[in-house]
Length: 353
Image (cartoon, rainbow, N blue to C red):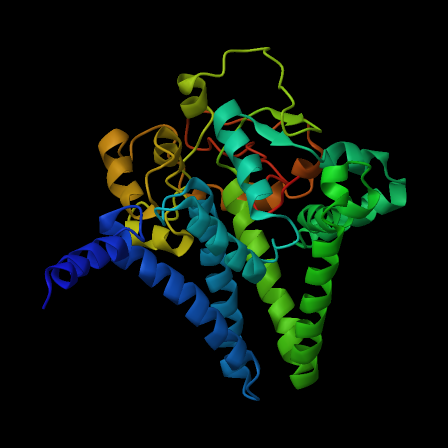
Protein backbone atom coordinates (compact mmCIF):
# COMPACT_ATOMS: atom_id res chain seq x y z
CA UNK A 1 0.00 0.00 0.00
CA UNK A 2 1.39 3.40 -0.98
CA UNK A 3 1.78 6.29 1.43
CA UNK A 4 -0.89 8.24 -0.40
CA UNK A 5 -3.34 5.33 -0.07
CA UNK A 6 -2.61 4.94 3.64
CA UNK A 7 -3.28 8.64 4.18
CA UNK A 8 -6.50 8.65 2.20
CA UNK A 9 -8.27 6.18 4.48
CA UNK A 10 -8.09 8.27 7.67
CA UNK A 11 -8.99 11.33 5.64
CA UNK A 12 -12.07 9.65 4.17
CA UNK A 13 -13.06 8.35 7.59
CA UNK A 14 -12.78 11.86 9.02
CA UNK A 15 -14.89 13.17 6.16
CA UNK A 16 -17.62 10.60 6.83
CA UNK A 17 -17.63 11.46 10.54
CA UNK A 18 -18.04 15.12 9.63
CA UNK A 19 -21.40 14.41 8.00
CA UNK A 20 -23.06 15.06 11.35
CA UNK A 21 -22.45 18.27 13.26
CA UNK A 22 -22.04 16.46 16.58
CA UNK A 23 -20.25 13.14 16.91
CA UNK A 24 -22.65 11.93 19.61
CA UNK A 25 -25.56 12.49 17.23
CA UNK A 26 -24.68 9.93 14.58
CA UNK A 27 -26.77 7.13 16.05
CA UNK A 28 -29.58 9.29 17.43
CA UNK A 29 -30.10 11.30 14.25
CA UNK A 30 -29.77 8.30 11.97
CA UNK A 31 -32.39 6.42 13.99
CA UNK A 32 -34.78 9.40 14.01
CA UNK A 33 -34.55 9.99 10.27
CA UNK A 34 -34.72 6.27 9.45
CA UNK A 35 -37.80 5.87 11.65
CA UNK A 36 -39.51 8.89 10.13
CA UNK A 37 -38.86 7.97 6.49
CA UNK A 38 -39.11 4.19 6.87
CA UNK A 39 -42.14 4.35 9.15
CA UNK A 40 -43.86 6.77 6.77
CA UNK A 41 -43.44 4.36 3.84
CA UNK A 42 -44.51 1.40 5.99
CA UNK A 43 -47.55 3.33 7.23
CA UNK A 44 -48.70 4.09 3.67
CA UNK A 45 -48.27 0.41 2.78
CA UNK A 46 -50.48 -0.50 5.74
CA UNK A 47 -53.10 2.03 4.62
CA UNK A 48 -53.28 0.19 1.30
CA UNK A 49 -54.07 -3.20 2.87
CA UNK A 50 -57.69 -4.44 2.93
CA UNK A 51 -57.61 -5.08 6.69
CA UNK A 52 -58.92 -2.28 8.90
CA UNK A 53 -56.74 -3.20 11.85
CA UNK A 54 -53.71 -2.71 9.60
CA UNK A 55 -55.20 0.51 8.21
CA UNK A 56 -55.62 1.88 11.74
CA UNK A 57 -52.01 0.98 12.56
CA UNK A 58 -50.96 2.67 9.32
CA UNK A 59 -52.96 5.79 10.22
CA UNK A 60 -51.18 6.13 13.56
CA UNK A 61 -47.78 5.33 12.07
CA UNK A 62 -48.11 7.86 9.24
CA UNK A 63 -49.32 10.53 11.69
CA UNK A 64 -46.46 9.96 14.12
CA UNK A 65 -43.71 9.71 11.51
CA UNK A 66 -44.93 13.01 10.05
CA UNK A 67 -44.80 14.53 13.56
CA UNK A 68 -41.20 13.37 13.95
CA UNK A 69 -40.48 14.61 10.42
CA UNK A 70 -41.84 18.04 11.33
CA UNK A 71 -39.63 18.28 14.40
CA UNK A 72 -36.65 17.12 12.34
CA UNK A 73 -37.33 20.12 10.06
CA UNK A 74 -37.03 22.26 13.18
CA UNK A 75 -33.64 20.64 13.87
CA UNK A 76 -32.49 21.19 10.29
CA UNK A 77 -33.51 24.85 10.60
CA UNK A 78 -31.23 25.19 13.63
CA UNK A 79 -28.44 23.28 11.89
CA UNK A 80 -28.14 20.74 14.70
CA UNK A 81 -28.01 17.56 12.60
CA UNK A 82 -25.60 17.90 9.67
CA UNK A 83 -22.33 19.80 9.75
CA UNK A 84 -22.92 21.55 6.41
CA UNK A 85 -25.80 24.04 6.03
CA UNK A 86 -26.45 22.73 2.52
CA UNK A 87 -27.09 19.24 3.88
CA UNK A 88 -29.49 20.57 6.50
CA UNK A 89 -31.31 22.57 3.82
CA UNK A 90 -31.58 19.59 1.48
CA UNK A 91 -32.87 17.34 4.24
CA UNK A 92 -35.29 20.08 5.31
CA UNK A 93 -36.73 20.18 1.78
CA UNK A 94 -37.14 16.38 1.75
CA UNK A 95 -39.00 16.27 5.06
CA UNK A 96 -41.07 19.29 4.02
CA UNK A 97 -42.50 17.13 1.24
CA UNK A 98 -43.58 14.59 3.83
CA UNK A 99 -45.25 17.12 6.12
CA UNK A 100 -46.89 19.33 3.50
CA UNK A 101 -44.62 22.31 4.11
CA UNK A 102 -43.02 22.03 0.67
CA UNK A 103 -44.93 24.92 -0.93
CA UNK A 104 -42.60 27.31 0.88
CA UNK A 105 -38.83 27.30 0.49
CA UNK A 106 -37.01 25.73 3.42
CA UNK A 107 -34.88 28.85 3.79
CA UNK A 108 -38.04 30.94 4.19
CA UNK A 109 -39.25 28.58 6.91
CA UNK A 110 -35.86 28.85 8.56
CA UNK A 111 -35.72 32.65 8.40
CA UNK A 112 -39.17 32.99 9.92
CA UNK A 113 -38.26 30.67 12.77
CA UNK A 114 -34.92 32.37 13.41
CA UNK A 115 -36.72 35.70 13.82
CA UNK A 116 -38.81 34.04 16.53
CA UNK A 117 -35.57 33.37 18.42
CA UNK A 118 -33.72 36.59 17.65
CA UNK A 119 -36.62 38.99 18.20
CA UNK A 120 -38.17 36.95 21.05
CA UNK A 121 -41.57 37.46 19.46
CA UNK A 122 -43.99 35.70 17.14
CA UNK A 123 -43.14 37.47 13.89
CA UNK A 124 -45.71 36.81 11.18
CA UNK A 125 -46.43 38.14 7.70
CA UNK A 126 -50.05 36.94 7.68
CA UNK A 127 -52.21 38.23 10.52
CA UNK A 128 -54.77 35.44 10.75
CA UNK A 129 -56.85 37.22 13.42
CA UNK A 130 -57.14 40.39 11.33
CA UNK A 131 -57.96 38.25 8.30
CA UNK A 132 -60.72 36.38 10.12
CA UNK A 133 -62.21 39.60 11.47
CA UNK A 134 -62.30 41.00 7.92
CA UNK A 135 -64.35 38.07 6.61
CA UNK A 136 -68.15 38.07 6.28
CA UNK A 137 -69.77 36.99 9.54
CA UNK A 138 -71.01 33.67 8.14
CA UNK A 139 -67.53 32.69 6.92
CA UNK A 140 -65.99 33.60 10.27
CA UNK A 141 -68.65 31.54 12.04
CA UNK A 142 -67.88 28.60 9.75
CA UNK A 143 -64.19 28.79 10.67
CA UNK A 144 -65.06 28.90 14.37
CA UNK A 145 -67.45 25.96 13.93
CA UNK A 146 -64.66 23.93 12.33
CA UNK A 147 -62.34 24.83 15.20
CA UNK A 148 -65.05 23.80 17.67
CA UNK A 149 -65.14 20.43 15.87
CA UNK A 150 -61.34 20.11 16.32
CA UNK A 151 -60.61 20.74 12.65
CA UNK A 152 -57.55 23.06 12.54
CA UNK A 153 -59.14 25.61 10.22
CA UNK A 154 -56.68 28.41 11.01
CA UNK A 155 -53.69 26.24 10.13
CA UNK A 156 -55.46 25.10 6.95
CA UNK A 157 -56.01 28.74 5.97
CA UNK A 158 -52.35 29.51 6.58
CA UNK A 159 -51.19 26.54 4.49
CA UNK A 160 -53.53 27.59 1.65
CA UNK A 161 -52.22 31.15 1.95
CA UNK A 162 -48.64 29.91 1.42
CA UNK A 163 -49.82 28.23 -1.79
CA UNK A 164 -51.75 31.30 -3.01
CA UNK A 165 -49.19 33.94 -2.01
CA UNK A 166 -47.08 33.79 -5.22
CA UNK A 167 -50.25 34.41 -7.27
CA UNK A 168 -51.75 37.26 -5.24
CA UNK A 169 -48.65 39.10 -4.06
CA UNK A 170 -47.09 42.02 -5.93
CA UNK A 171 -43.67 41.17 -4.51
CA UNK A 172 -41.22 39.91 -7.12
CA UNK A 173 -39.75 37.57 -4.53
CA UNK A 174 -43.07 35.77 -4.09
CA UNK A 175 -44.05 35.95 -7.76
CA UNK A 176 -40.78 34.23 -8.66
CA UNK A 177 -41.99 31.14 -6.81
CA UNK A 178 -45.02 30.57 -9.05
CA UNK A 179 -43.31 27.94 -11.16
CA UNK A 180 -42.13 25.96 -8.14
CA UNK A 181 -45.52 26.06 -6.43
CA UNK A 182 -47.31 24.92 -9.59
CA UNK A 183 -44.82 22.07 -10.01
CA UNK A 184 -45.26 20.98 -6.41
CA UNK A 185 -49.05 21.16 -6.76
CA UNK A 186 -49.02 19.01 -9.90
CA UNK A 187 -46.69 16.39 -8.43
CA UNK A 188 -48.56 16.14 -5.14
CA UNK A 189 -51.94 16.06 -6.90
CA UNK A 190 -50.69 13.21 -9.07
CA UNK A 191 -49.39 11.28 -6.06
CA UNK A 192 -52.65 11.74 -4.16
CA UNK A 193 -54.61 10.70 -7.26
CA UNK A 194 -52.58 7.49 -7.48
CA UNK A 195 -53.11 6.81 -3.77
CA UNK A 196 -56.87 7.40 -4.18
CA UNK A 197 -56.98 5.18 -7.25
CA UNK A 198 -55.28 2.37 -5.34
CA UNK A 199 -57.50 2.83 -2.28
CA UNK A 200 -59.90 5.70 -1.61
CA UNK A 201 -59.97 4.80 2.10
CA UNK A 202 -56.17 5.06 2.17
CA UNK A 203 -56.39 8.59 0.74
CA UNK A 204 -58.98 9.61 3.34
CA UNK A 205 -56.96 8.09 6.19
CA UNK A 206 -53.79 9.81 4.94
CA UNK A 207 -55.59 13.16 5.14
CA UNK A 208 -56.75 12.28 8.66
CA UNK A 209 -53.14 11.43 9.60
CA UNK A 210 -52.00 14.84 8.34
CA UNK A 211 -54.70 16.58 10.38
CA UNK A 212 -53.57 14.61 13.45
CA UNK A 213 -50.02 15.84 12.86
CA UNK A 214 -51.20 19.45 12.56
CA UNK A 215 -53.32 19.12 15.72
CA UNK A 216 -50.45 17.66 17.75
CA UNK A 217 -48.08 20.38 16.55
CA UNK A 218 -50.57 23.16 17.30
CA UNK A 219 -51.23 21.76 20.78
CA UNK A 220 -47.50 21.81 21.51
CA UNK A 221 -47.04 25.25 19.92
CA UNK A 222 -50.05 26.77 21.69
CA UNK A 223 -48.52 26.71 25.16
CA UNK A 224 -44.79 27.19 24.61
CA UNK A 225 -44.78 31.00 24.54
CA UNK A 226 -46.65 34.07 25.64
CA UNK A 227 -44.69 36.27 23.25
CA UNK A 228 -46.18 39.31 21.57
CA UNK A 229 -47.20 38.69 17.95
CA UNK A 230 -46.33 41.21 15.23
CA UNK A 231 -47.42 41.28 11.61
CA UNK A 232 -44.28 42.24 9.69
CA UNK A 233 -44.70 42.25 5.92
CA UNK A 234 -41.02 42.25 4.95
CA UNK A 235 -38.22 39.91 6.04
CA UNK A 236 -36.18 42.82 7.41
CA UNK A 237 -39.13 44.59 9.03
CA UNK A 238 -38.57 45.75 12.58
CA UNK A 239 -40.75 45.03 15.58
CA UNK A 240 -41.60 47.83 18.04
CA UNK A 241 -39.04 48.56 20.74
CA UNK A 242 -41.84 48.89 23.29
CA UNK A 243 -40.29 46.70 25.97
CA UNK A 244 -37.06 45.01 26.96
CA UNK A 245 -37.04 41.58 25.32
CA UNK A 246 -33.92 40.16 26.94
CA UNK A 247 -33.08 36.60 27.99
CA UNK A 248 -35.00 37.01 31.24
CA UNK A 249 -38.08 38.00 29.23
CA UNK A 250 -37.50 35.03 26.95
CA UNK A 251 -37.44 32.50 29.79
CA UNK A 252 -40.38 34.07 31.62
CA UNK A 253 -42.49 33.87 28.46
CA UNK A 254 -41.39 30.37 27.48
CA UNK A 255 -42.89 27.15 28.84
CA UNK A 256 -41.74 23.53 28.84
CA UNK A 257 -45.00 21.68 28.22
CA UNK A 258 -43.51 18.24 28.79
CA UNK A 259 -45.41 15.15 27.73
CA UNK A 260 -44.73 13.50 31.09
CA UNK A 261 -42.73 14.18 34.24
CA UNK A 262 -43.10 10.64 35.53
CA UNK A 263 -41.92 9.00 32.29
CA UNK A 264 -39.50 11.43 30.62
CA UNK A 265 -38.90 9.01 27.74
CA UNK A 266 -42.39 9.83 26.47
CA UNK A 267 -41.06 13.22 25.41
CA UNK A 268 -39.30 11.37 22.59
CA UNK A 269 -42.75 11.11 20.99
CA UNK A 270 -42.27 14.80 20.14
CA UNK A 271 -38.49 14.55 19.65
CA UNK A 272 -38.00 16.32 23.00
CA UNK A 273 -39.45 19.53 21.54
CA UNK A 274 -41.38 20.08 24.78
CA UNK A 275 -38.15 20.87 26.68
CA UNK A 276 -38.62 24.32 25.27
CA UNK A 277 -36.90 26.44 27.90
CA UNK A 278 -33.71 24.44 27.42
CA UNK A 279 -34.05 24.79 23.65
CA UNK A 280 -34.35 28.57 23.94
CA UNK A 281 -31.46 28.75 26.38
CA UNK A 282 -29.22 27.05 23.80
CA UNK A 283 -30.89 26.83 20.37
CA UNK A 284 -27.94 24.96 18.82
CA UNK A 285 -28.24 22.10 21.30
CA UNK A 286 -29.53 18.97 19.50
CA UNK A 287 -32.82 17.38 20.48
CA UNK A 288 -31.28 14.32 22.20
CA UNK A 289 -29.33 16.49 24.68
CA UNK A 290 -32.31 18.58 25.81
CA UNK A 291 -33.58 16.30 28.66
CA UNK A 292 -30.21 16.34 30.43
CA UNK A 293 -29.79 20.05 29.82
CA UNK A 294 -33.28 20.73 31.15
CA UNK A 295 -32.57 18.78 34.34
CA UNK A 296 -29.27 20.59 34.88
CA UNK A 297 -30.73 24.05 34.24
CA UNK A 298 -34.20 23.86 35.75
CA UNK A 299 -35.41 20.55 37.11
CA UNK A 300 -39.08 19.59 37.31
CA UNK A 301 -39.92 22.13 40.02
CA UNK A 302 -39.27 25.05 37.67
CA UNK A 303 -42.35 27.29 37.37
CA UNK A 304 -42.24 27.19 33.57
CA UNK A 305 -42.59 23.39 33.47
CA UNK A 306 -46.23 22.56 32.68
CA UNK A 307 -47.08 18.90 31.96
CA UNK A 308 -49.44 18.45 29.02
CA UNK A 309 -51.94 16.76 31.33
CA UNK A 310 -52.54 20.20 32.88
CA UNK A 311 -53.13 21.76 29.48
CA UNK A 312 -55.55 19.30 27.87
CA UNK A 313 -58.59 20.80 29.60
CA UNK A 314 -57.57 24.34 28.64
CA UNK A 315 -56.89 23.30 25.06
CA UNK A 316 -60.40 21.82 24.89
CA UNK A 317 -62.33 24.60 26.65
CA UNK A 318 -60.65 27.50 24.86
CA UNK A 319 -60.40 25.94 21.39
CA UNK A 320 -62.72 28.59 19.91
CA UNK A 321 -61.82 31.52 22.15
CA UNK A 322 -58.10 31.41 21.33
CA UNK A 323 -58.80 31.84 17.61
CA UNK A 324 -59.80 35.51 17.95
CA UNK A 325 -58.43 36.37 21.39
CA UNK A 326 -56.07 39.36 21.55
CA UNK A 327 -53.96 37.66 24.22
CA UNK A 328 -52.95 34.18 25.37
CA UNK A 329 -54.99 34.25 28.54
CA UNK A 330 -53.50 34.01 32.00
CA UNK A 331 -50.99 31.62 33.53
CA UNK A 332 -50.91 31.92 37.32
CA UNK A 333 -49.41 30.07 40.25
CA UNK A 334 -51.60 27.55 42.03
CA UNK A 335 -53.35 24.21 41.51
CA UNK A 336 -55.36 25.45 38.50
CA UNK A 337 -52.64 27.61 37.03
CA UNK A 338 -53.44 26.83 33.39
CA UNK A 339 -57.23 27.05 33.70
CA UNK A 340 -57.42 30.41 31.88
CA UNK A 341 -54.34 29.91 29.71
CA UNK A 342 -55.89 30.10 26.22
CA UNK A 343 -52.69 29.59 24.25
CA UNK A 344 -51.63 30.73 20.79
CA UNK A 345 -52.93 29.73 17.38
CA UNK A 346 -51.37 29.89 13.93
CA UNK A 347 -47.72 29.98 15.02
CA UNK A 348 -46.55 26.79 13.30
CA UNK A 349 -42.96 26.68 12.02
CA UNK A 350 -44.26 24.68 9.00
CA UNK A 351 -45.69 27.82 7.40
CA UNK A 352 -43.48 30.64 6.18
CA UNK A 353 -46.04 33.35 6.98
